[in-house]
Image 1 (cartoon, one colour):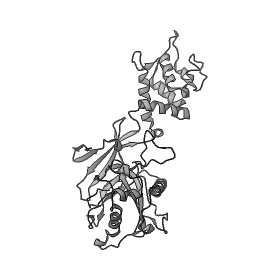
Image 2 (cartoon, helix red, strand yellow; image 1 turned 135 degrees about the vertical axis):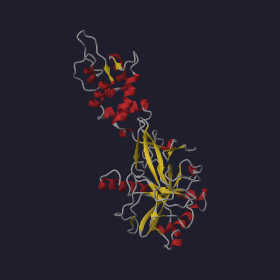
Image 3 (cartoon, helix red, strand yellow; image 1 turned 180 degrees about the vertical axis):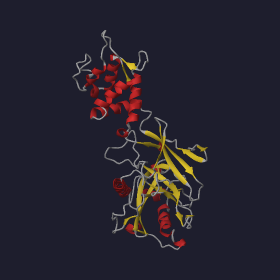
Image 4 (spheres, one colour; image 1 turned 60 degrees about the vertical axis):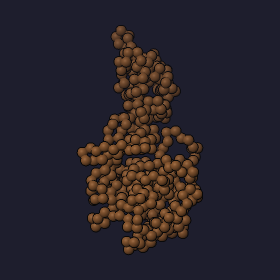
Length: 389
């Protein structure tokens, strides 16, 4: 699917509009402002009589019946004629001097919700019910990338923003820290004890290109930039990268952890090589399927290379583990390993070594490497005690 772009004050904006470019979060992570918007829609849907933004006792009775047991068994003791059905909602319906019932507006309902239900288990269950019907959807934010500066110069950056689909507000984010590693499906289609094999892959270097782009781990919001050496942009002199090369967000290879043969991590996010047919863009975020991992040793540091394929690739459905790659892409793994082994030699470097005698480990092993690197990243965040570093 084509990606619509626009020019705004010299900044190119790529709007990611496919379902895979939506960053999905678990429902418990919804902010209070998003919850309020959803509950407002719920409230308005029961304002059927006159649409004045207020509910009478009958309408609130219907609303509570919709919410179910968590609300029906709310705390009782306000001596309201609506107890026990409405429980603590009863105090929201005082009567005037003539005994006429006074209706409530959304603010009163929202205050009641925050006081009695937003933080307990019943309230969370009730909110899940509401969100399923009234979210638009609250669990999605649109990922937007912006290119600033001139490509292949020190000024070039790919920046990331989340657009809140509720408020339309945009905020700059870090591709390393803010884009989730695991893709959480709204509807789970596999057993609860089986991991969902879908991860967000950030492309740094598209296939058939040789400019060395990377996530700027030492800059605020960690945009993608071109690696520099003595102020000069770096390129692979060995030849074009033959696969989409990038990293997993929310991962880190710790310099304090020994992996194989006392080899420690390289202090970077976990590298990924996507072997699909389509050329990605620098900065694009793609859902991928894990196939295996190669343990490369670069300058005496462990530099894992996770082997993955785009979930949308035509052959992805036929590949479920590393042994399937030679069946559908013969020669791919050998070419990949050889490229990584020798690419530095033409620039006066030495060849890279590999753990396990260059053997590609399977999907299960790769997923463990990913999980461990995600835990290392989480611990790094705790140590740094800052959102962006």
